[in-house]
Length: 313
Ligand SMILES: [Fe+2]
Ligand SMILES: [Fe+2]
Image (cartoon, rainbow, N blue to C red; front, side, top):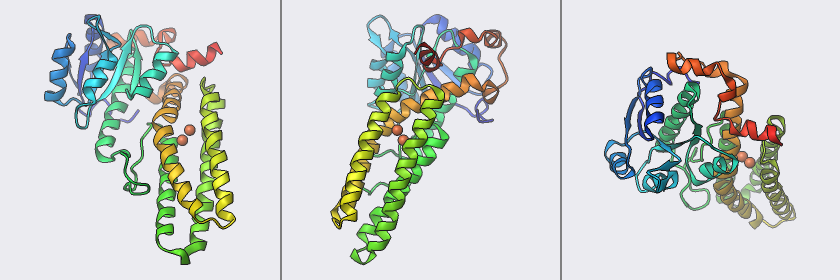
């Protein structure tokens, strides 16, 4: 956890039941954050537009009729929307994946663990700031995104590799566009890009195996498909088909646009949660009294659904 997590002001808007609301307030009281809670989605929706909070924490079900997906639908209409953290008493594997794939930031299990609330809300706030300063890809033409325009997954090592991969793609585009006299330059950068892509996939797969990631087969299948396609295009380029370099850029652009915000984001969330459980000291923060009592019972620790799921395998 970054040292300024509890001192940097963060405005939270919550749509929670009474018990969760009180629990969250007890944690927020020990920080510089502010919290406004709404019982009804209609009121919360209006406040989301007026107050422009950084983070919204909502229950998985609201007023019997609504779910977190309705909250997400409301947020999707807001420019630079707050990040959504969903709170659930009974989260499971399917909910975890669904929440991330729909675009929410994290899932917290109730009763809350103060460390997990601090971590999740802080990371969500950082992500919102990054989204504001570093817009994600939004259907721009291939290679036209500004440097650094890559979806962040909030896992430092993966984000760094994605950035490097993106920079290499940009260099390749520039090399191609600079003219045919630079064939050797294009070839060298393509070499680096192909090698790095393979290294990156291997890095992720090594982490998945080491940490017992439950969705490894599906994730690796996507990597396998990309590896095959890239190898085929690379062979075509080496055989003299210069168009293959463009197709590599095209493929990498669409692959990363699809893969990073879904598969890699799910993996990153799992790795974050694994780290939370395995190295709790890394997430130390001044403990609020009430929440601190709960921290003594690791059995109740919670957001790490993925760890529990992998244990079931
Ligand atoms: Fe991946
Ligand atoms: Fe990746």
